[in-house]
Image 1 (cartoon, one colour):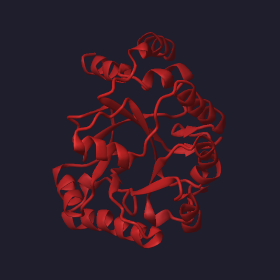
Image 2 (spheres, one colour; image 1 turned 90 degrees about the vertical axis):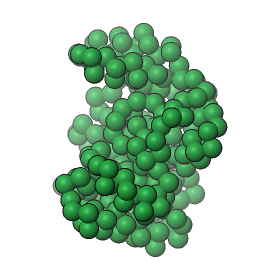
Image 3 (spheres, rainbow, N blue to C red; image 1 turned 135 degrees about the vertical axis):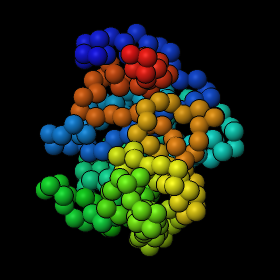
Length: 250
């Protein structure tokens, strides 16, 4: 679908809104002027957060969303904000904007790259993570970002449990949230997550969260450099579910 027709679709369907029994988990990566498809510019990120405020859409932490989900409480038509990989710009660019609006968020950390750079793109340091912990919760994203379904059980366990242990040592708080790299996982992965006592895990499957959603296979909504403002507004509604169903029947 071209950008024009995608914009038109989301503009027409965004009025569907988000009912009280559903929620949206936004998936970001980098907030910077880095020219990469996973990146959202600071200007666009600010505009998106301001829109959420203007529309009075509640923003809750992912842990709170999971608590409501497990308690079978209304999800409140709320939004949870997540970031994958732990880029340093999450601290330098995204965090000040989140703090401005008092929006909680979750950052999923690839622990082997804490304080390091990859392809000349720096990742946040332990000190920066600790500074953010007043508003930001941290989840595990494995140690080295592999495709978990392609690993042996022992290798996958080390990636999952190892990253959890490192984060708990840095932050002195339980790590109970996980994001599967590349959205790649299988039933063995889910079993390992349960054994490691993760409360919830997010995927890259697009859609809204409902009371029937599995806490270990939570869908998210991707926001990246290709996401226009019209599309962003539509993705904060059940329009994303309609869009995904149309793609399936394409």
